[in-house]
Image (cartoon, rainbow, N blue to C red; front, side):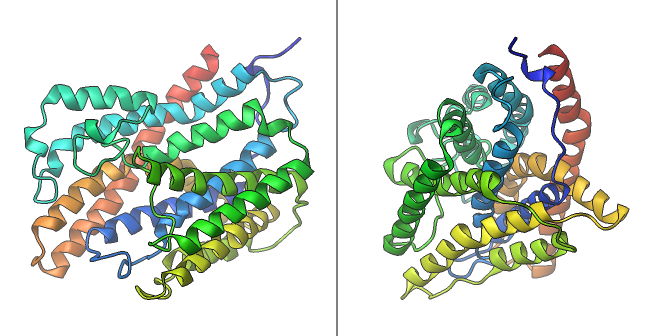
Length: 371
């Protein structure tokens, strides 16, 4: 008899991979905070912080393959979707709610029309956001043409859901050889885009138009497929101090200054190709091969892993506010900017933790009992 989703026991987590997901999430928050002061992508501090999303996709493919590849004799497609919705959807809803609450605080010279947006439009956008159905630029209420104007990072969850659907209906059935062919093809597509695009980077994916949808699918397909293939072919070893090593690699990769400048953008594209195609799968392999060496390290990994998703999906409401403030205070003293920036980062982490403990974990426990 086919079992339902809740009847299938959860496999042990890779503690270090959980911790690395948290490290990347914190870097994303720092990246977005510094971005408020960047004159262009060439001068951005933590210049490649946006590549954390591509790392998340590699990690997602690996974890999905590890968790579900050998369970389909007990698991239905509906059961799989229930488990994924149970894991992801509660915080999607909370992210949209927090974004709606904070929306009018972003009124600034950067978004001068915010105060004219009626409350019903904010509520409607929030309700649509609950479903992760993207809105078109014509329905944007902020001014950045985002598919999720109340919670910018929702775009990557939209693509994450697409990856989950593709996995359930077809990718899980592919042989290693067929999957390898897809990995090679999508790697080629990624390299071609990075070396020929005018920007020389993978920034984009959050607008419903042909250009951004192309970027979004380009960013999704190779990383997710590579992670999925890695989960099937890799034989993790026993690597000591893997969490520290992998954390350093992630920090260096994401903080690397822009390469090639404005005149040679293809050089930056080459760098990002190397990071996404080679370095990120290597980091996931090393993380899967590692083991925590102390109770302290284990607790750090658990804490970072636990808050990683709530932090990622809720922090941008506060980034909108800080970015709006920064746009209105170009001449403000640096100490004040540092203070408000630090408050944005620490406040985002605190809100993520509170959401985790008092909303996400209780709701997921309730859904698990119901389903």
